[in-house]
Image 1 (cartoon, helix red, strand yellow):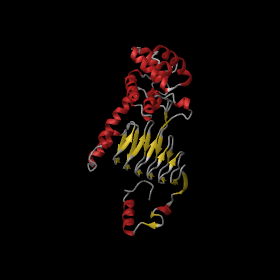
Image 2: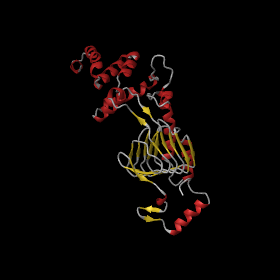
Image 3: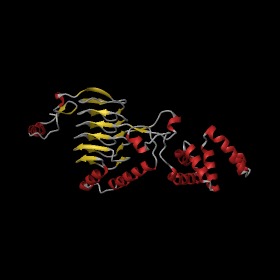
Image 4: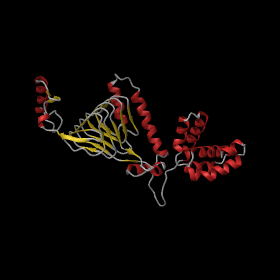
Length: 312
């Protein structure tokens, strides 16, 4: 193909590229064919090439990495132009949209309708993440507007998510700086939960085989976090994980499987270290105990019924 390009024989180069594209899936072939279709004004051929490329979402990224700025700009322009042609992909006789497939935790493709939902979320995140950090009331209002449900949740910006509307938080949830929640599927967080900085919750995933992964199909699997859960700094929660009430996950853990209630767990992969018991009530840090003055206040709140349920 390149030989005929160098010879200025566009027709022969196009023929060779068409013959080779299905065999090798070479990015440069698709770039050439897309550009050729654009120059010819052949919209039908342009759409077919775009749909068959398989890896078209990665074309402009790979070109940019290799420093081919001129091609990068052109292909990025094609990608934006072709968004209008993207439609939900359906099998014969299938009536589900990609949004319905996504919400059913099935394989789906991020089509135009889904990207519109994400645009709404990004506008809300833009507001939240660039607010005056001392405007606590304003931040609380922005968080309430972003999330699907919450009761007094507070998030220290910056915060990142895909939809926001798929996240449900209970009472008195506190999330510290730089949390990321990829909420393709529902993320349900119970009452009185605390997240240290850099916590990441991923409901999103992709097939492990490259043929399936390059098809653009992906999935989301629901994550549930119970009441009174503390996640340490840099904890990662993977798709489909459920964490029970009153659990503590140690800093830096990667949680790939369910964690039962009343568990202290840590590690990569995260494993239960031991149960949390009444003997831990007065523990502060390692073997150090809570001082008498603070413990008296804690016990007083418990007696008045103002403590977290089932914690004292």
